[in-house]
Every structure is written in C-alpha cells, then in structure tokens.
Image 1 (tube, helix red, strand yellow):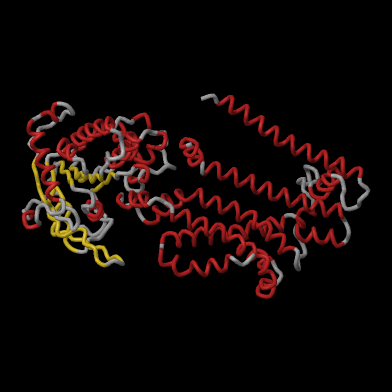
Image 2: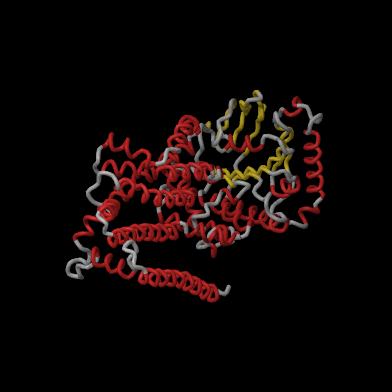
Length: 271
Length: 267
C-alpha cells in the first residue's frame, strides 16, 4: 500500500480543479473589465457586492447583515422544510412500497403518473389551493423533491438481499429492528442517491416558487433586481444561489461519507 | 415423557403457483435427538430448502407439525440458530465482525454478557483478532466462520446449517468441517446439517438422513458407526466410512426417479 502516492495524487487533482476555476474567474474578470456592457459587471464587483450586501456587519454584528435575513434566511427555511417533508414521505413510502407488494401494485401506476408532472407546472394550482404563503412554497418543494427519494428508496429496498432479512428473522429480531437495523442500512446508498437528486430539484423549485407572489427570498430578490435594471445585485443573487447549491452538496457529501463509509470501502475492496 | 429435541411429523408443503399446485414435501417424518449430528442429503431438487425454511419457522407448512423440545412451533422458535449457504447475503456488510456476531443478542442479553459471548464465539472459530474488521475484508472461509460464531453466540440448542460449506474451496472446506466438529464438542450443540455431498455427510455426522426428489419423502435413516474425534485422512480410510458412504450414495441414486418407492420409506 503506498497511500502517500495516492495522497499526493489527490492533492494534485484538487490543485488542478481549483486552478481551472481560478483561471475561469480570471478570464471572466478580464473579459468583463474590458466590456462596456451594463449587463456584465466584473466578478470582483460582484463579490464585493455580495460581501457588502450580506456579510458586512462585522464580528460584533454577527457578520451577516439585516438584508441576509430578508434575502437568504427565508429561502433556506423553505428549502430545508420542503426537503425534510420530501425525505420523510419519500423514505417512508419507498420502504412501504418495497416491502409490501400489495401496496406497490396498488399505488405504483398512480405514483408514476404524478411523478411525470414537472413541479413548476403545479405552481398555479398551488397558488389557488394553498395561497401565496410559505405553505405554498414548502409544499411545492416537497411535492417536486419527493419523487427521486421515493423511487430510489423503493428500488434500493427491493434489492436488499432476502438473506439479510431472513438472518434477522431467524434470530427473532423484532420487525422494528429489522427495519432500522437491517433494511434501512442495506438500502442506505440508494436512499442517499435519491436525497442528492432531490436536493438539487428542491433548489430549482424553491426559486420557481419565489418568482411568484413573494416578498422575500433569493428568487424574489433576483426578479426584483432584474425588473429594476439593477444588474449588479442580480448577479449577486445568482452567486448566492450557486453558493447555496454548492454548500448543500458539500454538507450532503460530508454526511454521506460518514454514514456510508463501509459502503465506499467495500466497493474499493471489490474492484 | 422425554421428547427428542426436534420432532417432525407428517410434514407436507404445497406451493400454489400459476401452473397449479406443486407439492414439495409429501409427508416427511424424522426426529433429531439431543447431542446428535444429523445430516440430510438428497438429490438436487429435493425439498431441502423448503424443509429448512419450515424448520426455522420462516415458512408455515401446509400440513404436519414440527416440535422443538416438545413444543409445537408456530413461528421462529427460541433456541434455534441457522447458518446459511450464502454468507455474503447473511453477514451485514455495514457492521464489523464483532458487531455482526453480537447482533442477534442486542436487546436480549446484557452488554457484558454480550461482549463475553462474542469474544468466546469468535475465539472458538479462530477469529479472535478479526472482531474489528468488516466481513468483506475476510476470505470466504473466514466469513462463514463468522456466521458460525454468530450462531454459536446465540447459544442455540439446535443449529441448522444449509449447505454451509458449498461455496468454499476444498482445503477450506476440510478445515471448516473439522472446526465445526470441534465447536460442536465445545458448545454441546445439536446439529442438523444439509448437504449434497455424501462424503461430507458421513464424515461429519452421527446419522445420515436421505431425501427423495420432490414430492419429497424421507428415504433412509443411516447411523454412522464411527467414533469421534474424526480425522480427514484416517476416518476416510476406515472401512466403516467407505461402507456407509457407499450405502448412502446407493440410497440417493435409488431415490432418483424410478428408484425407491415411497412405500419403503416409512419407518
């Protein structure tokens, strides 16, 4: 085992990745600073605006500004709530479908039909049904983000080797423990794949829901800036959005690599 | 009144399929007494999987009774452990070896006792040092030893084994056979062992039962006149071994279609 070589190689790869990103930023800076166009501020201007707008309150003020609580926090709350609902419903239903064939046969066609509806299409309906409040946005995120979790859980649970379950049953292990200590761990890598996809879907739906009848949030800020021809803030909101996506992915990867450490190691052994 | 440890009476099972009813077990009768090492052999397609599933309580037979220590079983009974053929689908890859062995004891046995039993069982199968490894870091033979250790940690009265050594190489297989005979002495456990290897059944057992093709009945009950401890070389040279081996093999051949009639099988 020469882990040091692998370690060096890893550092090298990370350096190349960040180098490419830095190069792109540099090219962007160069191109925009030469351009006269109002639509394209330079990245340095954008980052200065992001900092000024949301992170300029200093250490005593808790760093983040009041604007942060109007522009960013509401979006974060909606996203987290929507995803939490999507994940709990998706995992619960997915396990039920995977373990109880009668349920699967009964509701699978309905579920496939509902999944075929793109989330944003339901926006007008959601507006009519649940109004313009947080409930509308959260339920839209939940509805759109539930499918990948549900179907990934369903297929992962179905693929759990029956031997695991029988081993536990012969050991007279209770049904609850079979669920939490056998079925869910055995299906966890599939469930996580669903959670990742649902998170990026959730962000898309979050913004879509905030474009309509909103008074705060990233999507609202974005359209407001655009409608009032404030192109610098518009870019700042775009950056905020990409940061949100990047950070949520970082968190998920962190949790996943902890929970699924055994899985990753096992895969590397079986290569 | 003293009961045999395991009593199987007129066990029948019929699967309902779209092609019609399919009878797999057609009146199986036998008993296993405490301390015995009974092997069940039969041609492929005999109902041995169905038989084991009914014995372990995973499958409810359509007819007949199974009693463990005199009690008719209705679900998975207490005092029973099982070692499956496919250790890959039986050891949990997310639990380390020690945690796998401990798993059936969780919530039932106090922590200190659990630790002690885990250590003792792993030591008995020669894997005392492997507790912190993951099962998939071990060889196939070692994984099956972990499965045996897990079964032993449950302190079963009856250990069911479903072709446990069918997926390891020949040398490992001999080692596992001898290991099994050692832990049988150490833990004083009664074993019902399913295999389709006639040599293995005679080498390990005190008694060999043979099954017919489905619809399955018991076709023979042959005592093995060999003493313990057994030895891979000398036992297999012993005339009694050779004789018993031939007898069982002949019975299995007769049990194939056109062989022994079911009338001769009742004992």
